[in-house]
Length: 256
Image 1 (cartoon, one colour):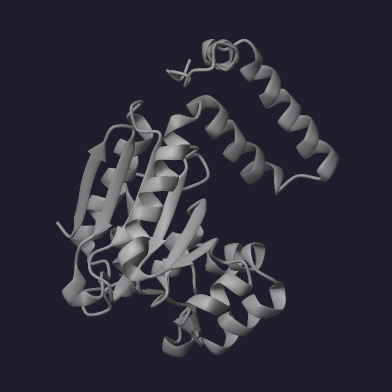
Image 2 (tube, rainbow, N blue to C red):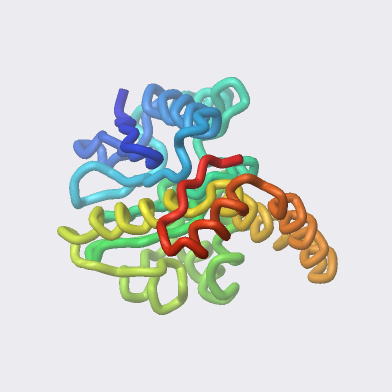
């Protein structure tokens, strides 16, 4: 189906597996990816996901243009499956790590922008090249890229369609880490396990506070964060966290 899905403990590993097509998404892979995101959201045992591409050449280069349906079918067929977009929407409060191991172009970069943490290999390349083919970064690129990096740099990327390399992506804050290709998955696994080891309700609340707070005036965002803090105050996990700290042992969180 072009997308692999493996769950290891509380971590889901999602791999776009079409290396012969630079891990671009054909209709079958798109449907499968939408199904996987629905599974991740519904499965209480999954606390964090890692999204990557097979091989070292590409993370994802967006839609497979050779297999794209005709325009009147494109959006329905490629981007939605029973209301679930291929890009995780803001109601996916479980964190997602984008593990960029090559080209992240067009819809591929848009998928990475929808994730919460982006790391990459030294061989990574990033770009929204839609203007070169008379199109537009229509999933989230025109809105998420200027929120992730300085507006001037985002506008340059959007209007010229030029690519930037891993070091430039790190310099402007698009990615948090740049490592050699053979160390990339180990780093992703390390971050995923650390996140999965934290209290899941607190992790999701932290993401929700940031994502929703960015669309609010600062005063309202702070009030919203306080409400989330109050909702967590009497959870079993918070009691366990305090108890584990006092007993000098690792906490055993259960998400309740």
